[in-house]
Amino acid sequence: MAEPGRIQIGAESLEASWFLMLAALLFTLGSIGVLVRRNPLVILVCIELMLNAVNLTLITFARQLQNLEGQLFALMVMVVAAAEAVVGLAILVDIFRVRDVDDIDELSELKG
Amino acid sequence: MIAQAVFWAMAALAVAGAVGVIASRQPIRSVLSLVVVMLALSVLFLLLSAQFVFAVQVIVYAGAVMVLFLFVVALLGPIRERGGGRLRFQWGLSVLVAAVFVALQGAVLQGMRFRAPSEGVDLAVFGTVQDIGVRLFTTYLYPFELTSILLLVAAVGAIYLSRGVRAGGRSSRPEPASPDHPPARHDRGTTSRPQRGRSG
Image 1 (cartoon, rainbow over the protein chains, first blue to last red):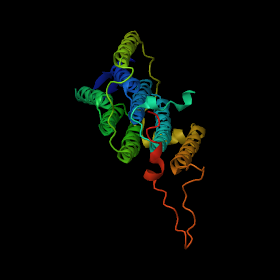
Image 2 (image 1 turned 90 degrees about the horizontal axis):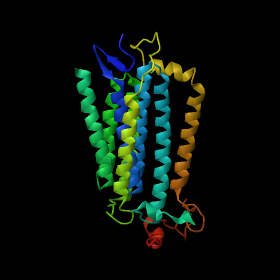
Image 3 (image 1 turned 135 degrees about the vertical axis):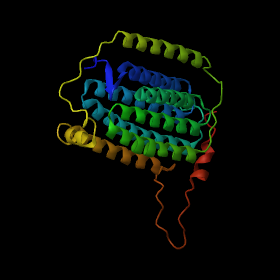
Image 4 (image 1 turned 180 degrees about the horizontal axis):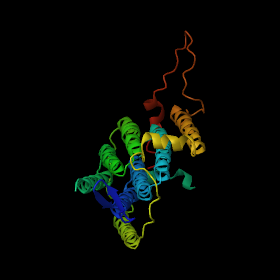
């Protein structure tokens, strides 16, 4: 019986922390993208990256605890991500129909 | 050995793709880099015995959602991001914040003790279509139905948003054609361009 923090795959075992660290790194890279990029489309892409990183965490814990609920929650996250992408891109196309936006700071009409 | 090699190769690929997402100047390269990240992650899902999530990730996510992004990139044309501009200090500041964040996560993971896995789970069927399907249609039927409503709402919202509303508040649906007045051609390029550049 392997220790709890390791994931047994065939004859060898992997450290669950490696997966979690990778997910943390990807999430951080996505958040850097949201912070520094100006193009609204690229910001949406970076949000997708962050959602994927969270999915990796959920699936890692599902496997480590041998509990399927993590995978089901990852599927729900995918559904929400798809809905978010569809609505976000529709809003973006609507905005671009009126004018070109190459910096998200230009969309400040609601600031008052 | 093989599983470790697969893990490190896919981890390197995912991180490289993520750097490509945030560092490339053109949006289309960001989107394609994200596809690389998603495919690398899908292999990791397979490693973690999540076969169904792997298939969904490849088909729905890397397939459908990313194609939607590519469509929008192609529709909007090449937009180059202006370098510099206001808030130039954002780069340094956000890298600093991210470094602190990663360090905190590493510290948390160092001292983490995992709970013991639950007993009596057959790993041969864990995460298969059968396993997921049984759970989804018994215990989690209510959330499953809610997701279908969510998707319906998103589809209706996207159609409503992309239908386009003209200045008079009318929709862009073509008027019924009459013989002496052919329907006005609402070309999206010509009707809306005058407002461009208002923001200065």
